[in-house]
Image (cartoon, rainbow, N blue to C red):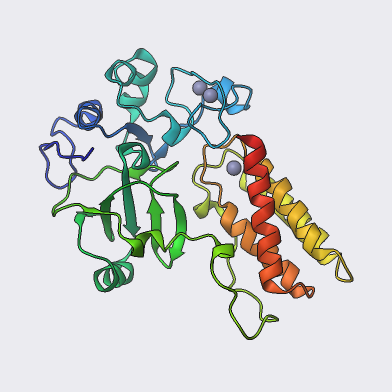
Length: 305
Ligand SMILES: [Zn+2]
Ligand SMILES: [Zn+2]
Ligand SMILES: [Zn+2]
């Protein structure tokens, strides 16, 4: 369950001969499913069959499909503890070109609170119980036992990486690993489960915008996503008189469906925020706009699974 293997370099966790495959096999033996990262520390692109979506995606993806591609396609969804897959010819080329090793925390029953910078680390030290900590380039990974839904940017500089996500493997870290505390679960809560805030409903929600940085696992181009999103926002704005709420629902569902085949994350939460903001600007009460958008995003994912 835990990445307790002791790789040789205490800093990177990699074997001194630079063999990412050996690091991966160590992780797999400890029950942690690894995957190779290419230049830029991102997953390898999908093969031709998987790239056009005709494979349908892997069975463990949100939009479960029958893909059994032998290559490390579909990012986190390809991560496996099966040594025969890790050492297969289809993966061998990826390991040779790999620049880093990642793992699928959710697949190992783990959650990584990824703290991007010193301010985020300071926040964690004040707020979260101290668990196993792995130093990263500019911040820290705090690792907890237990899997949960992942979400990017739950606070400035803080991502929660668990199910349907990958995290860089930077060594086993130090400290006793705690069970996932409520404080971490609370970082990722669906909006509609929080009680309605009293007071001003006409205020525009906090600005969150979609960009490539929140969509590491999206297989579409930035231009494609942005164009679709702008078209949807225009639709919502065009219904200032009435029906903007149901437009928001329809636009959210339509946009989310476009990403049914992506390994994710695609930044759907950020897209949702933009739709909520557009609806509020034309007079839809924020709680209603949020519910409409969340329902739209959910409707798309339910249909896909
Ligand atoms: Zn493939
Ligand atoms: Zn595939
Ligand atoms: Zn996508």
